[in-house]
Length: 234
Image (cartoon, rainbow, N blue to C red):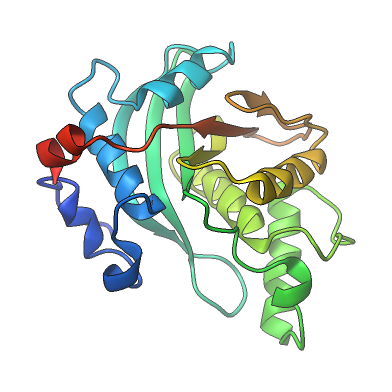
């Protein structure tokens, strides 16, 4: 786990943190669009992309939230053998109700990686241990539909784990989408149903769970960056 971080000089600094900078860094792909969106937002009073700020304001508990710190490609260690959960952005926000740990998943037509069924195919003991741990963190039953997307589980768990680490009472897993994608939207809707949430685009809803941290799930649609915005921050 990294404890020392260096500020970015612009969106291009996000590129070197990607798993595959050559293929992931291009116009209309989520990595570049997310970087430009958040870099441009630094000049705003709250430091947040407009669509993100608007969705926070529609949730009374999170209304008026301001960005304190944001870390691109932030890694959070998980139990069991395997890679850490790597959020496209992890952000610490300040609300009137305390700190908010936010794991942002950028999408621009890309799927939520493998389904649980695909991920668990010929699964090792380490994978089963990891899934059990994720279910405990999320407070959901391990008897899960195989078509659910594994990425949504560990990304949401990472928001809760970082909330615990920073003593934040609030945690949010937020999908920021830059292109229409009905398949990913339906995957998100199915995931929300595990927490008693009826998902709506542009809204953040609270999960039905107990525990020291309150959990929220949200989806926002953002426009693709303009040439002017890219030139300003890349």
